[in-house]
Each structure stands twice: as C-alpha cells, then as structure tokens.
Image (cartoon, rainbow, N blue to C red; front, side, top):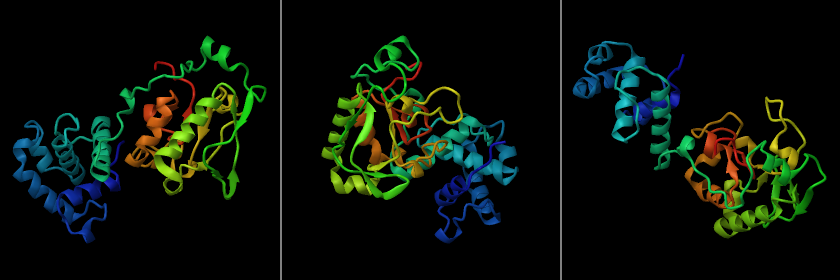
Length: 277
C-alpha cells in the first residue's frame, strides 16, 4: 500500500500557509481542520463522483485530494482529483515537491533522449562485443583526469589516474576537461564532482548475475554516498538542477546516466547504450 510521506505532508502544510512551527509532516487535527476548510471552499474542483467522500473521509484521502489539486495547478498530470493515492498520484506528488524545491520540473526520465555522438554500442549486442572485447584488464589504459579526484571511501586520498577501457579514454578525458571548464575547481569540490567511486571493477551488477559495465572499464561512479543505488530523483543529489550541466557534458559524448534515463543509480554513468534506447 502506498503511504503519504512526511515530505508530502510538509508540502501540504506549507501550501496551506500553516506556521513554520506546525509543518511537522504529521497529519494531525490542526492540519486536518485547515485542509478540510480549503477543500470545502474548492469543492467544485474535486471530481463530482468523489467530492462528498473526500470531504467526509479520512485525513489521508483529503490530503491526497489536496495534493492532486496542487499538482494540477502546476500542470503536473495526476488524473482525477479523487483522493486516491495510486502510482500516478504518487509520482505527481514527488514531482510537485521537486518542482517547488528546485524551481524546475524533474527530469522526465522515461522520455529522456541521449544523443550518441560517440556511437556507443548497445549493451550485449554484437557491436558491443566487437568494440569492447572480453571483460578484464587486457584493454585498459590509464588517463590523467583534468582535475584531481578524491577517493569516495577515503577522501584524504587523491586519485590522479583513472584506469578505463582504451575505447573510452579519449572521450572520458574530453568530458572531464569540459567539466573543469564549466564549473571550475572550487565549484567542482563544492558539488562533489570530484568524489570518485570507481571505474574498472570486475564484478557482477548489483543484485544481478550478469557482468557490470565496470568489468570492462566503461562505466564510472561518482559520490555514491549521496546518490545511492535505489534513490530516485527526489533524494539523489545529482538529480538537482545544479548538476544539469554535468550530465549534459557527459551526454554530449553519448555517455548514459542511469539516473537520467531510469531514475535510479544516479552515481553511475556509462559509455554504452541501454536496450531500447
């Protein structure tokens, strides 16, 4: 069963102009009273078949209807204002939180298109095997990144070279050079664009049985502590607007962010296309 998160309830309390001290993320009696008054005033905007049940229903249903109304005000599709918290409404509420917090809508990851200037092959395809060969160290080279990297699990250590597949080396060097030109060293450090969590690593995909793209040295991870595997764009640091240019630089070279196209594993970027892209 889908539940209303505290972030959604805090959003509702803020949109109801409740005092800061009362924005606690809890659907208490005070929030209920203000919310019910608002919904009664805006009854004509509720789905006619459900209006009475919303107004006379529980706090969760009223809160859901309120969130649906606010999402529609921002042109976020949520379906009928019926007070039911289904998957579509849940996504709409997360998008509403992101929009209000960051002043722009979240990345429409299911429709996100990435150019393929470097003509990276599709994972598992014949072209993939022809271009990258067998996994392992035989095709690896070392590059010196345009700016120093810090080891994610020991920030006192500086990473001065990155081992990657020879086929991606020039592209990776161009990406990091453009990142330095765009952000500058100070801003790179502020945003954690130098917190390096690895490139070549002969292992299986997390939770899977097939080899990770790291096994070929064609994928990199950054700032894993703030972009954990199962985090979506409402939590992942690299989903925020200040990282848009970072991803655009990678994508100009055809690299694929799993965050931008699948909304998970925002730490990860790879020089290989996903099936269906």
